[in-house]
Image 1 (cartoon, rainbow, N blue to C red):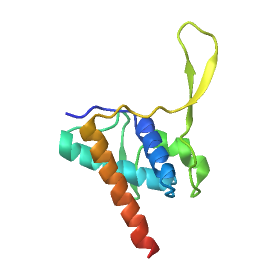
Image 2 (image 1 turned 60 degrees about the vertical axis):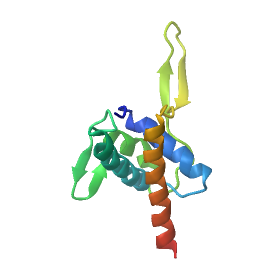
Image 3 (image 1 turned 45 degrees about the vertical axis):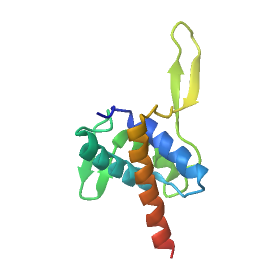
Length: 128
């Protein structure tokens, strides 16, 4: 049984992984990868990977919160995950930090890595 995560946190993981491998990633590619993760998650675990509501339209698949977060990049490369504001309990200081990477279980990380590998192959196929 897989866990349910915030799509923002999964998007952060995807952005870090793709940037680490020097692979182009933009808002639309994040949405496509999230769609693949969701599909495989449903297939393997029988439930959604995300807490957020997923919109499926004729134009494609969208996790609204993630799309809006990276909308400012347009078709450009996303170099770092977005930031969130965090207020630590007992303090009055608002801290800006990047979205955390999920603490995936082994089976979950394999699934996400499989999706990332498929994405890289698609990019290579388009380039050749």
